[in-house]
Length: 237
Image (cartoon, rainbow, N blue to C red; front, side, top):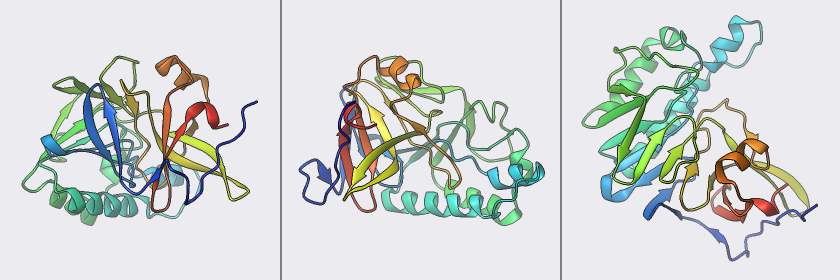
């Protein structure tokens, strides 16, 4: 068994602002869990899972009903930080097929406000395969820009940026074990962390990631409190 990676404030691979190169394209990996492609002024987020709380409540599992507000607030902050011309929501933006119907009027207004003066693309996901036309923006199954293809479910193709798997990395820091969201990438493809407030995660050592990257040498760009930590997936556990 490989030794767990240690995260410390003095570690050379620890940086406040991270860039990740995918198929020759350099992207900013924001600590919120978003990608920003500066030359295209393109912001990408994945797996918002809006209205997950109300979906669980309908099944008798009571969660605080604030996930949509919290997620949209975080999305508003990252949009204000980067001022993108285009936003791509990379699938599973809504937790189920009826989730958009449960949006409150203020939440609908918040989404509309985020779309003002920018292009907005909803990628359909497995949780929301048939997005309605009244949410603003356009709906697509995938989008290709130059060498980069944006889709929800990863295929392992070169130049691919996908979501769906909600990658998390388990590491030790200051003698304790922590599990954090991360970007997973081998330089040719990447899987984004889930952006939603109530989203869980899948350990990057799971076989699902091995099928995509086909090598233990891919990197986990782990989202810390104020810094990104670049750690080989083989050093996580």
